Image 1 (tube, rainbow, N blue to C red):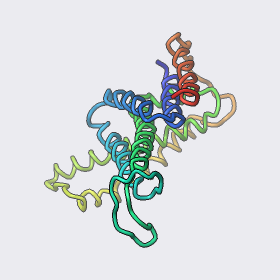
Image 2: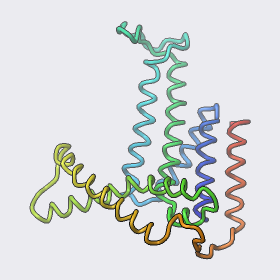
Image 3: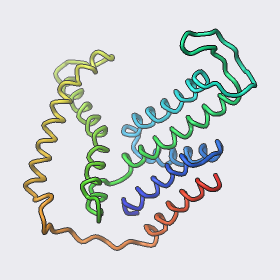
Image 4: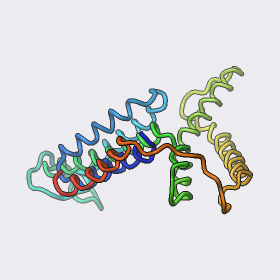
Length: 232
């Protein structure tokens, strides 16, 4: 499947999760996206999955304490200044689970986009808004690139007899990672300028024709948005 069609399909799943009004529907979308993310290598997907699942769990935990809805009280707590009386109702808990699943689904859609798509082919296949597509592709590569650089630094330090452990040890990697990111951005800008990026009359490599599967993915993406808005 072409990266553009896959990106459209992931966007349709994320939009359907945002438009859906049933907890079960959002849970199914999140489960499908989780299965997609599990196709990525374990070493790469771990950070994305932890971020998506922890963010959703945090919404589930926090929502009942910041909302004041419902009358079926499950737990009644103390009165806290500014926040008021803390209690947990069935309605608040249901809404927290719903919003947590919604956030998890959207985060998993972005994780699948970052882990499974070929961003070089996505930029090459863009027929319009190429600058915006390039900016999104470069931004998506930020976390995997920093993760790869951090792993390389840890290996080089281990080879010199220095073991990087704990939060403080990993925090010391921030300075070389930042310096490496700035150097990489300058090298990328020089490479783009040398290849004539942004100049008129640029050539483009031949692209394969859209297959039936690619067109079906686009149709399915639109259908997911419509179904999420009207039925889910």
